[in-house]
Image 1 (tube, rainbow, N blue to C red):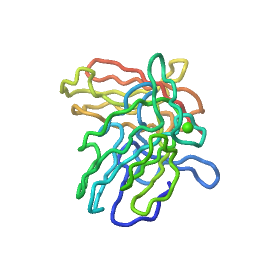
Image 2 (tube, rainbow, N blue to C red):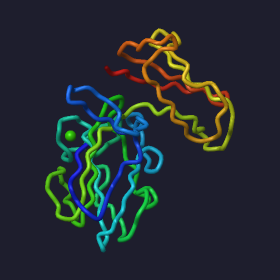
Image 3 (cartoon, protein in one colour):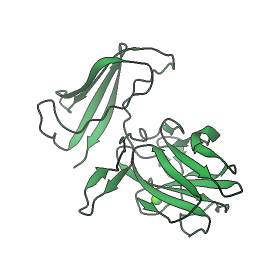
Image 4 (tube, rainbow, N blue to C red):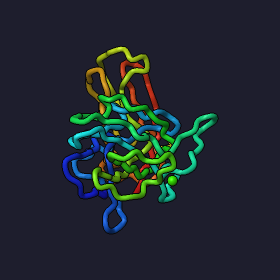
Length: 239
Ligand SMILES: [Ca+2]
């Protein structure tokens, strides 16, 4: 994480769950991070459920929030949009000069910022969150130092969200089962088998099989059974 030194305002990530790199090049969760991924490729990231930040604006005037995502993993932000599926375009500028009123303090999702397309799945993507008093240009590439503002970078996972939110949106309670399979269909781990209330539940797999040892790197599938409905989500184990 890279936090600029500024005073009087702040932005802290609530969702998704950020990762960080160790000095040895390893990958670990940030402190207190759930590790919740942003969501699958070519789907919509929704503010308040997939991504959110707490914003405190004590500038004495309106502030502007900008968010950049390096979908292409080329170390630069902005520029050309990336193609996503057929007919879907996802920009690296995922939030542009979004106004936060003076005195606002709370999750940015309360202000209903526009949702955006997740271009890349099953990989880690650098995000840059910026709060300024300055309108940033349309072709902004994340550069610059601002006297009044804050900039934070986060490494977020795209890919699978394990969830029992029903497609219909109707409330329901009941038994929820989450099982991890390997490519051959063998059960590697049972993560959950219990009664859960309606709503989004985050289930974290630490990469260990039911018999203890760390599973090999590769592709796995999480089978989520909720109230008789089954959904299968693809996951990639990185080491
Ligand atoms: Ca890029």
